[in-house]
Image 1 (cartoon, helix red, strand yellow):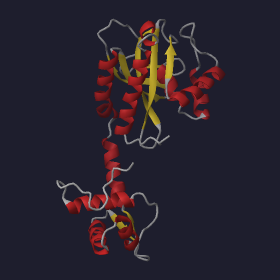
Image 2: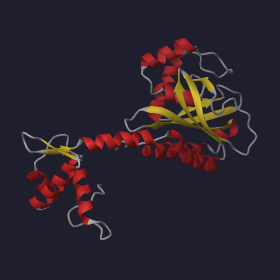
Image 3: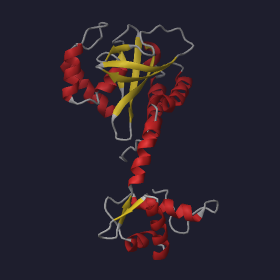
Image 4: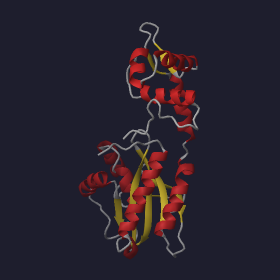
Length: 266
């Protein structure tokens, strides 16, 4: 259901002219073609003179473009310029850390943020726990992708050629007796990871250590970052599993939305 106000629904605390202009912009953003002032007035349910006045003001500030041949209107280039400024301000650390801290407080396990860099998992943030847990990852550290939860969830959103390149150049060395070393088996697992939006490292990189990881989607629906929860096997895949998975997915969903991602309705 839309949250956009219709004519006559603007809150009393709002400046009506500004509220009307914003509503007009939201309506125009739904069109991928030019629209006439008459059609837009009918859509909004406003007098043509009101619609024209707002369009003219927005046009003068380059938020609306008007075709010199048809006289019709469309969203202006100024939104593109401002959008780029906003995108540059979306620093992953600034956005993610509050959500990572919240997740850490809920699950009481190590929480990490990572990206793929030159075929490795590069760890960007680590929120520790009060529990004594010695793991091989830390900020700035690199680990193989094929045997870590973060690596597998990031690999799952690479195309086949990129996955083949990484695996062939980095290899798939066994870190424990449970490490997947067969490319075909890993690729089958990547398919499941994409479907579930969840990856598990079940003692594949360190004995008795498990990791559950989920992707972060950016505004274009691409996955460049992921978040993980890491702990002892009996904690991670035991009674706490449901809490960890639910909380992790909520965390990555919140970060994705803050990055501008809009999930498609099922």
